[in-house]
Image 1 (spheres, rainbow over the protein chains, first blue to last red):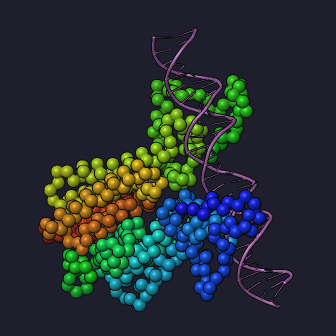
Image 2 (image 1 turned 45 degrees about the horizontal axis):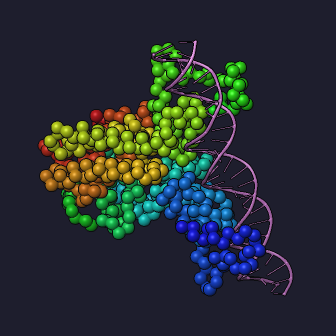
Image 3 (image 1 turned 135 degrees about the vertical axis):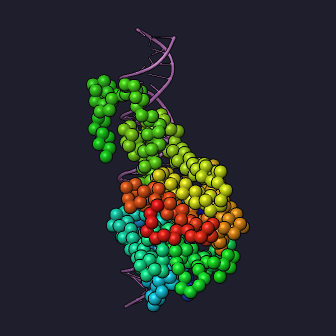
Length: 238
Length: 238
DNA sequence: GAGCTTGGCTACTGACCATTAGCCATCTCA
DNA sequence: TGAGATGGCTAATGGTCAGTAGCCAAGCTC
């Protein structure tokens, strides 16, 4: 790592005239392809590093190295390290809420609404596990205007699940002791997924979403419409 | 905070002769009571601060201030900041496993074993929420000999739940699609508890443990012994 | 082709921090 | 009473890091 770091250290600026740069200045597209939008490459690298090492332990030099530039050069693309974190965290909550709205729209049956909400929740946590992981671990690293924004959205998101369960309970479709605990349980399962899931493991994202959908309906104490109750068939993956 | 910090800054050592110290040297017990075991006070303060601010953001000076001494003085009681974290994290996993062993010992019915395991899990996460919270959030802050120790115990702990569920499934008492996902779900619910539970809230620790016990049995697809199935009665808190 | 813009770079600044060194007051115990 | 142990303290050390300043090369535009 950082192999090009201490080499062409170039005492003075004039050294660069003799070609001591290892990475030549190629700020814009050389051929047709735009050098792959630096801005988003930086965001991605930051995400990966924040997930792997934590926000505090990740330096701007680390992020720079991951995209092939030096730390200070990052400031030509982002305004601060904190901005990178805030974007990830707010974006994550916003996407979760948006996905949830899509998931339940046009569905009448409360059981089906819960299943789809949970599937969307799990899908997001599996597909965007780094975002979700960082989003949960680094709340305390956010400073104030942003931390409250994230916590507010998080609580909106939880409320959607809780109210769904309350509604189902009122209709007689669900049976729980506490809708709040049921919703926390369901959401916390998803958060867990972000910490252990990896593509190519025992389950696909779809299988995971389906299984967690069943589990959530069990937690909610769902009474089936017809005869068979939820998740009755052991071993039947999808 | 840190009010006594920048006051009696005492230019030279001889200044202390004129009594400029705000906190007089009283290293050992003045009366009969041992000054309240500094060592454990330090551990507690560190735990509280690690939970509130994160390990990296907590300074030795912070911990010192919390127990009324300066940062460097801590080294008379602990060998490093890292040691404080490692003790918390290893102790947490060790206690969880010990509690689990006690919880299932002497119980034959696999349903009851699962219920008691989950109740112990939830009780620990509610009663020692800071330990559990830090134990989950700071795994990456641990450096190597210790990180593997913690991860090893964590995986032992998960295996105990998974094998219990597998055994129950083999006996026909449980019905799950995947024992692994069931165990992850159950454990992740508990981890969540550590992040939101607070004494004096809507539920007592006992109520919480009982409710989560029911939820876990639902997740496991427990078939009741006799006639009534698990968690049938909505609103009946214990 | 001259000037502007873009996006690199190095050097530096100002903090902060874990830990060590070494001083000293108090307590304990012979 | 006096020597050693204990547990405070300040000062210093060695290191890290976010962000700024200012230089410069290459591309774009007129």
